[in-house]
Structure formats: C-alpha cells, structure tokens
Length: 258
Image 1 (cartoon, rainbow, N blue to C red):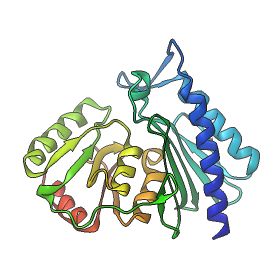
Image 2: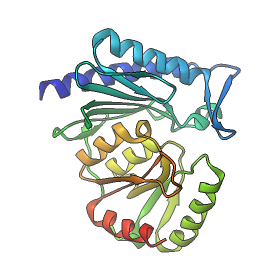
Image 3: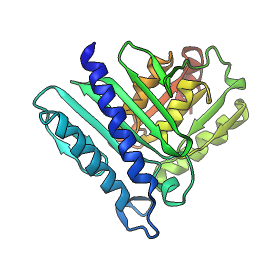
Image 4: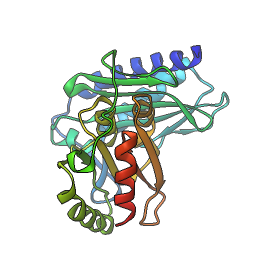
C-alpha cells in the first residue's frame, strides 16, 4: 500500500536524523532515573525523542505517539507511532556499539512500517507490511530450519532484580542445550539480527512495545515467527520470542517448561 511506503520513508529519514544527533556524544551525561537504579535515561534520550516526535508531527500532525521517554498523543488518523529514541542506552552511555533508534507506525493495533537504525554499524533495517524486510536496502531472510542444539541465541536482562534471578535460572538450564548465547544490549537490534540471519533466535522477558514494535515487523517480513506474551513477573511488560518457524516452536516449548 502507498500509505505503508509513505510512512516507512518518513520513519527512515527521521531515524537517520536522530542518528546524526546521537552520534555527537556529550562529554558529560545527565542521568534521569526511571523505574529503578538500573533503569535510566540520558539527556540524549530526551533530545532524540523530541526530535523524532517533532519531525513526525510536522509531516503528520494528526497522528498519535507512544514514546519510551513520555511522548503520548492520541491519534486522530488511526496511525500511531511507537518510538524508542535510544534502544540500548547503557551501550550508548559506555560508548559501546549496537544501540539504535527504533520507529514503528501502527494502523490501529497493526504495525505497518518499521525502521531500526544502528549508527555505530551503519545498519538500517526496515520493513513495510507485505513488502519484505531489508538491511541497507538488500532483502533479508531469517535462518530456518535450525535445530535447538545448533542455534545461536540472543537475549537481554530486565531492570528488575527479582526478574534477573529468574532469567539467570532460565539461562542456566538453556545454555547447555544450544550452540551459544549472546547478550548484545539492544532488543530491537537483536530481533533484527534474527531477521538478517546473524542470530538464530532471540528471547527476553521484561520488554515494552517500543523495544520491539518496529523489529517485530522486520522479523516477520523476513520469515520469522514473533510471539509476545505477558511477562511471568506479573508486571505490565512483555516476554518475546523470535526465530524461524521451526526453532520458534522448539524454543517456545523449552522456555514454557522452565
């Protein structure tokens, strides 16, 4: 659809503009604590979200916004943008690679366009509904089929200490059954690595919509199965699993048994 491609083009341009802003790292960071000592935002998170929201609304003033750092606007058009201005803030703070900007456009509840841009690797993943997935404009596909014992998995850790203890137990049980495990630091990038075949699967508890909205579409357009459920800690966050269809079934069964 023309609308999907229009929204994708806007998301791509705005993500690149935010990446340019963020590539100018400050010499001193101001940390804004959120849910706990491990959960914080920098001044650049806020600046990036303001830039993204402002540039989107300049082109589409009737659209809605959901942003990690507080952007919240009801849609008058049916289109709502889901924004993570820096996914992987800890990586950004420590000057590690792999952080990204994630921008998704939803029509109602359905994601129809998504961009994940990681400036440190000059990697831009994108997809619009039913049009395939791309990395730097080249088409991508996930790995499938992959057996669990041959799978390279990615994961992430929650901010909540109690949840981390649960995650540690899951990894203790899972690690002997897979090829290896990576923790790279940004949920959206990890899901996109599954889409482009650099990881075989990704799972994480304690994530929010802005962490995975854009990447979920990219992964599905690359042939992966993406599932989201309520986190087991009873919080409002979610648990996600993404992999090729064969491995998704195996990994889901393995994680449900823990």
